[in-house]
Image 1 (tube, one colour):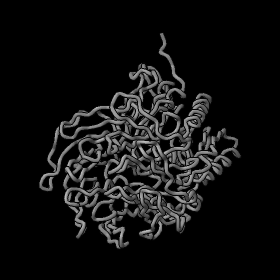
Image 2 (cartoon, helix red, strand yellow; image 1 turned 120 degrees about the vertical axis):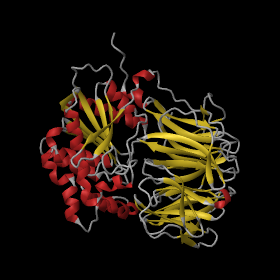
Image 3 (cartoon, rainbow, N blue to C red; image 1 turned 180 degrees about the horizontal axis):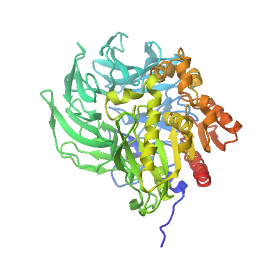
Image 4 (tube, rainbow, N blue to C red; image 1 turned 90 degrees about the vertical axis):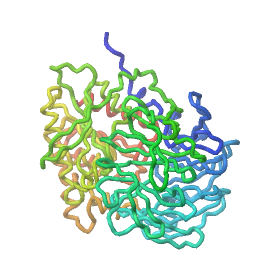
Length: 596
């Protein structure tokens, strides 16, 4: 008897829960997309039905509970345009208070003051290409400009007694840290001139500063930074893998951290003792990918999001002393049996320079030795992102439909050390595309693969990789799906958000070098495209403007090659409405059925 098949709408309607924060009353507050777009929900106990707190149709991007009052601040944009405005929500009576009303500006959440009386954020109110630092009272009073930025990204890492720690991102691989006194506006640099990443910057016991950083290391570790001298000291090494994140409670010294081991999260708990981390009980969490680690105000519990290939993103509460972990949110799988949700195999394949490229490989159910199946080569964005073994509803749908899924982490991906992330910089851009060609060679050698039915598929920078792959190696592909991809690096840099331009130029190349940008831009080789192409984009995309989709579609259509576009007027870089997602992937599924 054949197994039942489920619609793409069924898979896309599976909920997810993320970005947990714990209120002073002990309630878990988090984002869930149960209504079709992320909203704020709460739980006061595990295994109970959550309460929806916000009534909006627009997506909510974050929520952060006050450290001292039963209230939270959340951010919401319009039409997925990323121009977040901030709102305060009273967790006891449901009152919602607008805190900003500058729809032309982007507001990046910075954090609460230690006493909960104020909060900080950065915004490009003064100049579109510059983020400044603002402090505002929780009562909704006017924001005070306390620091003028110098162009580009500027974000707030944390606010503690010594001041506000700022992060200036010159490129995805090069940050600077500053300590700002919000009362005087005085600030000083904590980092030096080395190219270094910083994340999860937190004040710890005795107001010392801790962070995840690759300072003086190929991989990321937990380090202590002396706020007076700026000296860095590694206190927890990731060894051959990156420490990917941690939560730290300053008063108790408790810390929970995770290590990224070939894409899977290895979670540990400890406590600071005499400046060192003393290990506590090993957490009893299942293998998966962890995100969003955060302590409650008392430091007794750590909340985190966890996902795995067969389990949607859910919120767990961990006791760091005992290691006991309990699932609080359980979105379920809408009746789809979990045994139908497949786990990938981690493989490595050799590329042109002898390097081993990591990838995830998943075959559909019940493939016989003489079966030859079509394959979707799903390429992540970033470029310094990493494909990981988390829950993808669309991946599980296409596996059900009989496609195998190949997910490479080509050179330039994060998760495998600093050197690896730099292997595709600027003039080496096309080496990562050659890694895709090597992936297809690996597939050709696999007995279960139909070499004539291989699909290039990717979003954002992965969309560029799709367009590059079908122009550099046009004979390899049966079809291609490009989500919000870059077609022309010159027009992309000219039209992307002003605050992003210099940052992106560090990775891709400058407008001052048009010859390089022309050489790596698929638009100039569009006459080589021979496979059917599906293009998705959002008209409100501030990162990769919709003109990138329009111009490549026009070029391909002129040649008589089948091309289908799906452009949403009410979406941006990400499709955030479930209704739009369902329409989008119903069309993609039909497109692939027709051409593959």
